[in-house]
Image (cartoon, rainbow, N blue to C red; front, side, top):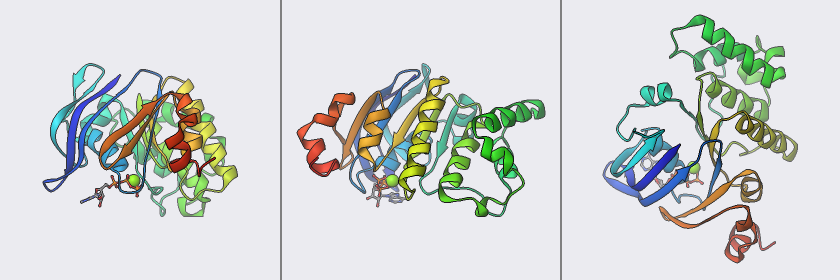
Length: 234
Ligand SMILES: Nc1ncnc2c1ncn2[C@@H]1O[C@H](COP(=O)(O)OP(=O)(O)OP(=O)(O)O)[C@@H](O)[C@H]1O
Ligand SMILES: [Mg+2]
């Protein structure tokens, strides 16, 4: 579904990612873990054309999307939920969701997507007229994910969805991600919570200093290095 070949990218001529190869099969969850500053967010931003790609190729469903502007990537079926719960706090839940679909011209389709999102997240329907700032951290994260789903996404890019959430809320967010994936949406998830991420992912990539240091399936959780560095020696 998505293939990244020898990607070199960064900001203002400063290279952060040094030759990344990664692919996502349809219906797959791919986890990206790694230390702070290793380039995880930059990898997602490279796909979504929010930083500079110096060389390499990104293909989505067989089409070269490397140079496509972000709004066209949304049309192609890629959605991005950035790090740090980016909701419009002064808008209501419903307005936030409608903003997610602003790129669509078809009102009936927007309403259909809204109903589908409300079905998946019943609390958002209940709270549709509440301001986003009045939601809890976990609810805001759910709203950010729901907003991305308003765009008919086929591939969802999630940057640290569990950051700052209580263990209970974290569990709920991970369960929702699995549920969304089961409905046929591919997911790339960047996570600090390595254990949970590896558990739900079909494959995991470890990023260090802008390079893939390690990759594997769920068995990677038993890898000595992963245990020592990312799972606190457990
Ligand atoms: N907008 C930007 N302009 C210039 N440099 C940036 C920008 N965003 C990130 N960087 C640099 O790119 C490098 C990788 O940052 P990135 O945000 O991709 O790391 P990360 O793995 O997501 O880290 P974290 O776990 O802290 O979120 C860092 O050295 C950072 O300073
Ligand atoms: Mg980051």
